[in-house]
Length: 209
Image 1 (cartoon, helix red, strand yellow):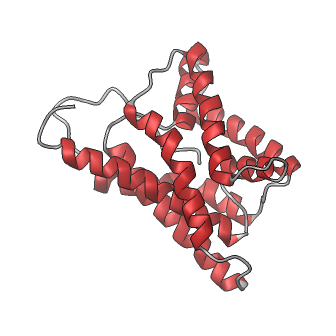
Image 2: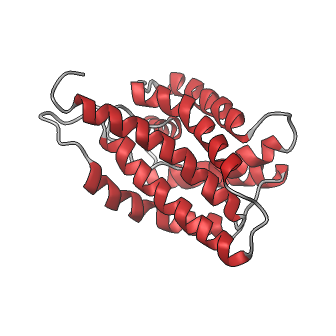
């Protein structure tokens, strides 16, 4: 936690988490398909009197509990991710209008995807630990020996299927997210990574949502 880079890392973490939630809100307002975990939160929100952001927090807490048998270690970034992304998504959903023409909604989705990818570069580049869903993915990989791509795909297929059954929005945007988020995150991570004197203990892959 010490060093001249600490203020920058803290700023990156907090800005990145806020922008991450804002990116989610833009993609949801695009109404052409949400990211896998957001499909699940959308679906749950249709059956309980809670906001999307509150459900996102609750989902993150459940995922963090699944870390325990996987022996994954939390970072401060992990905890703040679980607590801050949901409220920032709610702020975005309040501010961004609904019912727009298709071309506007497609623009919303593109903006959201780019903002989310840049936010990922910011918060992961700060080296304060992976997000809850990233840790679940890497934990299952470590415990089972299955390839990362297989674990991630399996988790997201299950999450999307459950969310879709509950009424979440699955569409071309869901597929576009799956295909584009990895390369975009990698690009922004190279831009925003904070160079450390020692390799960080947590070096998560691009988030699943």
